[in-house]
Length: 80
Image 1 (cartoon, one colour):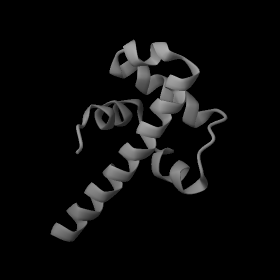
Image 2 (tube, rainbow, N blue to C red):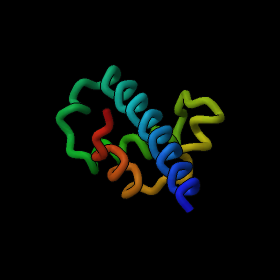
Image 3 (cartoon, rainbow, N blue to C red):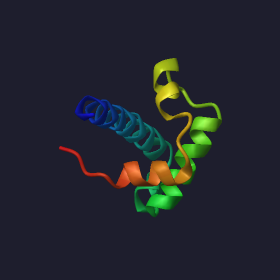
């Protein structure tokens, strides 16, 4: 059971990394991204994933099934 939890944590960490990269990419395109609410940023990311995102197949597989709420939650998690 603990191994399954570790796998879930690892997957969430990888998803968070991909989302962070997308936030940076969106921020380079429009600096106002950093002043938006988490839900607004999550919507931009979701649109980006569904649109012409430059994600690798592996990264796309990690984040493709995430809902708007999933993205919002992952963005709000603080990691070190």
